[in-house]
Image 1: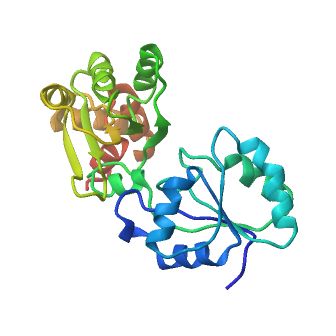
Image 2: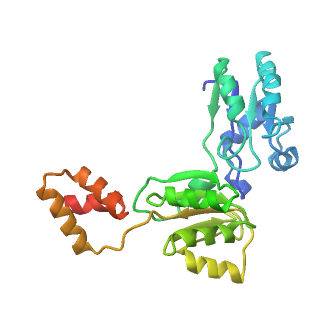
Image 3: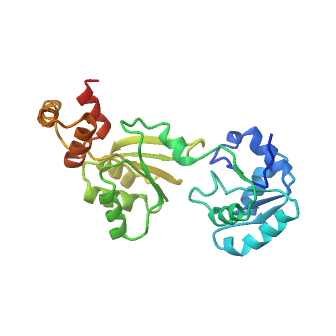
Length: 270
């Protein structure tokens, strides 16, 4: 197997048993591990009897660490990068050093592994595979509402903290009172919860008992309240004018906020 200078290593998002054999092997074999919080990472390393030393690498010292890491690798050493939980560079530090290492000719490789978004979405039935992931939402209500409007016709996925989740859902309800919402929290842990409901019901639920744990949320793409008969009439009208199935899907999706794949299946008769 080819060896690399720098490895991106995902770590479990909750259940320690989700780490891969290869991740353990890499963390054991490298000369140094760059991590967000050494206290968090050390618990993981101790659990798997990994004795590799750690160095802090987080969003507040990313730029100043770059020169040190480049110098370390230049001496023939190998390193791994981990975040506190999940995959580095996905809402976690790492972008700065990876950009510099690739520019400097070092060999960088990433291991597959735990990620909250993928773990969450694999439990959520969707008509369309496409989605927009924007990490954590901004703090200002106006900015949040702008994002909700911008992605109204697309599945929108984001992270949210427990102390902000209720207000965020209320912002969603203000813009899209009939929105369908899916959320997951405490993923892979003992009290994991995943639910799908309309935004009003979830708000009422959380007002009675606000749960703990970090959230992954998806606002389903908006769909116009149009029955199948009306949709078929719209499709036939466009077909009579010579539009292709693909064009019809795009046109009706943008005009009536209906899932593009759903329209396409109607057009081709599936």
